[in-house]
Image (cartoon, rainbow, N blue to C red):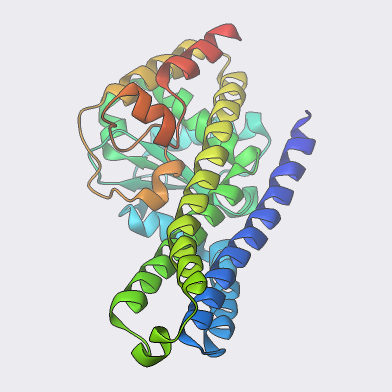
Length: 293
């Protein structure tokens, strides 16, 4: 698949993703409305889902950066980083993105935005302290690849909308146990109650599965594209090995932003668990794919 086709494919996936999440959120509010016997809930669900989709598209990057405590830096603040980003951006054929640094001591990095003209990359202080120049170039090339491939649009939209689904599910649970018209609920069809419970349980799971599937595929592609920019696979391989072994946990951890980072920001309890519930491929798979290049 050509770079242009990949970018076009990612834009199409984003619109499909937006409609899927709008459908999920609207459907959850519809079931809540049926459970409560009020037509106002479906209308509220449609308003919330549409407004959050717009926020995800136009302001999702700002939310991600703020959640990570990132601050924008200028050339004089970090000249070496700026030179790496500028040089690799020229090779990738994209505008130089805004550069942010987070004081977070965990070794990680991510890119966000809606297109190459509105993109940012964020480097945690931990990754700047841990990696050497070649390794840092590999990481930055990986993040620029997310921008070049327009992965950032899919990832940014997924972050915001998956959070909304989890929030609505939480509202649903609270209404079921503590809120609403108790007399109306006593007269309801048991099938409706089963549907209600199934919806608020399954919707966040579906949302998470979409997030996992999208993220793993994007990481492999960004790894491959990144080494075509640096022409030095060993730099990214060494960086990945260090990042996956980094013992410092993130001080800004959130499941909604897991898929943004180049390496898992939270350690799993075992390899099998990591493979099933991680937003990232295993380190063995990523390194082997790079070596195969």
